[in-house]
Amino acid sequence: MGVSQLGTQIQRVAVAWQLYLLTHSPLKLGLLGLFRVLPVILLALGAGVIADALDRRRLMLVTQSLMALASALLAALTATGHDSVPAIYALTFLAGCANAFDNPARQALIPNLVPRAELAGALSLNITTWQVASVVGPSLGGLLLGMQLPHLGPHLAPVKSGLVLAYAVDALSFLAVIASLVTMRHRAPAASAGRVSFAALGEGLRFLRGQPIIMWLMVLDFLGTFLGGATLLMPIFASEVLGIGPSGLGLLNSAPPLGAVLAALVLSWSSEIKARGPAVLVSVLVYGLAMAGFGLSRHVAWSLFFLAVSGAADTVSTVVRQTVRQLLTPDELRGRMTSINMIFFMGGPQLGEVEAGVVAKWVGAPLSVTLGGLGCALCAALVVLIAPQVRRHRA
Image 1: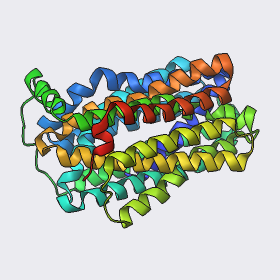
Image 2: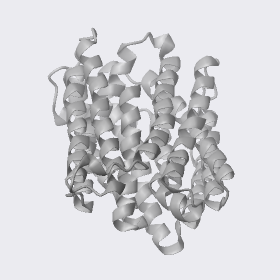
Image 3: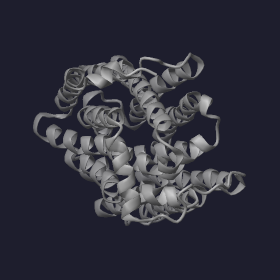
Image 4: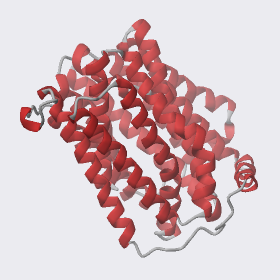
């Protein structure tokens, strides 16, 4: 997954930069988040039922292949000069549909591969692997975007040759996951094999209703990332606010994962966090304040610092929330719980990109990010008051 995530991060930087070159519009950059999250909203609940009913490994073989196809098509369209905003949105939507099924299957598979007592550490290491790729990927993506190779084709402008390389690298990176799944010895199907029905979906929703702590943690995650997310505005900060260009865009995108890696390593080496509720609340508060600081900053060093702090805070929140959800959920329901969580976990940041793009169109990107960060911190404070079970939750 680390290899695949490396390619995915390269592709995300490339897509944002290509949209910026085509439109120079913060609103259209923000709309990219809408096309990423629509498949989650439309398909996630059904995808969770399927992840609990079918062989999760085989399901991932299909989803990973579809995501590789989407990146290969992006490379082909750009290389032949047929790239366009509608094509980018359409292929983003296709990859989002595949990811809507992939994520529940992948997360539900993890607890079957490690002892229960080691789950929290395993989740931390899993996030560490993901975040290491997220540090290296954007930086490598920035380097690829800066390459100009006019001999790649007569229809390809030199400035776009780096985009083709980025998309091709991402398409090839999925082969690492596909090969791992083929050779994986774990073959156990889900306990509820064959149960693809509305009744199975209702079973998952009833379980969630009986676990208010899981629901509140999902809501807090959604509110925090909806208000504090601004990844798709990074090209504007790199080009217009900080003046550091595409290579600097890679640095901006790498800073949050770098802070996340450090936080995840500390979590995986340290003893288990007992005060889980307070840990999530403090993490969301710090995340919001750090994003507000990034929006106010006009110096590269301070901007990178605030982004790194936001990544560290987000990782602490993610690890604790995943640990709570996985430990409180029986295996036969993990796919459904993951899919419900995915609506919050992915819906928040992706819809937040749309919100940030709309606000940035009216007040500018820096003020949009600043206001969103302060709103995120305010949400954490409000949850302390209205959901006492969160602040009291302990291991």
